[in-house]
Image (cartoon, one colour):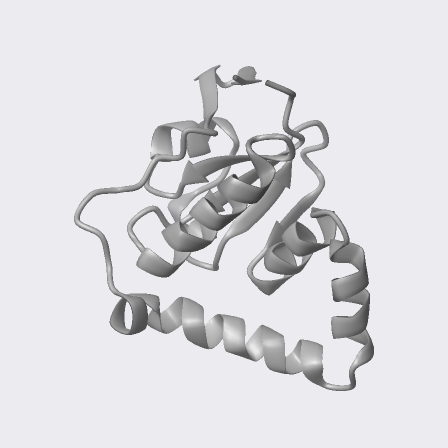
Length: 142
C-alpha cells in the first residue's frame, strides 16, 4: 500500500461525515488520505488536535508538514483539489462570484445541524485506511 500524505479528521458519529469518508475511501483507497474519527482522542492528542479544534469542522492535515492544516470548508476544498482533476473543479468554483462565500456559510450551517438533518450513528465509524500513532513522537501511516 502506498504512503498517504494527508490525514482527514471527521466526525465518526455523523452519518453525513461517515458517508463522505466512505466515498473518499472508494476513490482514493488510502493513496492520498488516512482517516481519523474525531472521537479517537488518543491519536488526536499525539497530533496536538483538541476536541475543541474538532468542533470547528473537519480537519485536513499534511502528514509531513505540520504547518499545513485546513479546517471546515477550506478542508473540503483542499480535499477536492487534491483528487484527480479536482483542481479544475475548485478553480471553477472559486471563479464564480460569491459562490465561495455561499459555500463557506453553507458548510457552517451543515456542520451545526448535521445530526438533526442527517442523523447520528450509535457506533463510531473507523476507516480501514486509518492512522496509527504509537506515541507523541512516532505517528506512522500503515
